[in-house]
Length: 254
Picture 1 (cartoon, rainbow, N blue to C red):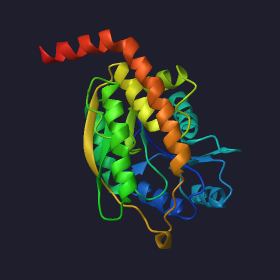
Picture 2 (picture 1 turned 45 degrees about the horizontal axis):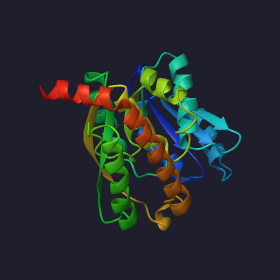
Picture 3 (picture 1 turned 30 degrees about the vertical axis):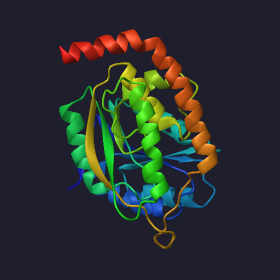
Picture 4 (picture 1 turned 90 degrees about the vertical axis):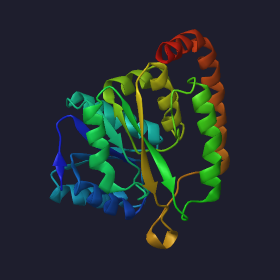
């Protein structure tokens, strides 16, 4: 069942995902409209495929960055345009086929019922998930929860989530970071600092094989160094916010 909304937008950043992005968009359009894609400087021919698809799908809109700027920048571009069009919430979804399109409606309904909250997908991995990705993210999750006094970020790196647009733009305008792979964990922490409520919901994840068209833009050394630098910055930001975060935590407890 295809649902439509004037407040909630599905936004998909894409970089060199090949033909799989077309399958992802077609699946998403079966469950939700509108769907916007921000092509982040792709040079693999996927831009032309998406523009052709948009000609036959009125619910699809394609934005383009002339050069690769990073996932966070792509989300920022789409979210800023969404705000200008009157949307209030954005569901981000990866273009590589890992996130299940059939759960878009469930995520959106959670957001519609809890408009102040960010809805964070919590990945449920199967045997297709690389062990290094499953276990490596636990370190980032520990740091993200330390930096927020354990407000409940079950997974800091998972990109299938819904943000209130106003709050997301505020935190992104407050920093020059969160523009690349660091986007998902950094904005989750910064939104938690602002007191945005968190709702976690389980989401099954499937890593596609190369034969199935699966791609990955994750670079082990580069992106892990990026995360180390990000959590170092966020930890010092956390120290400055300890009194406020502690008071907020105590009010909830008592």
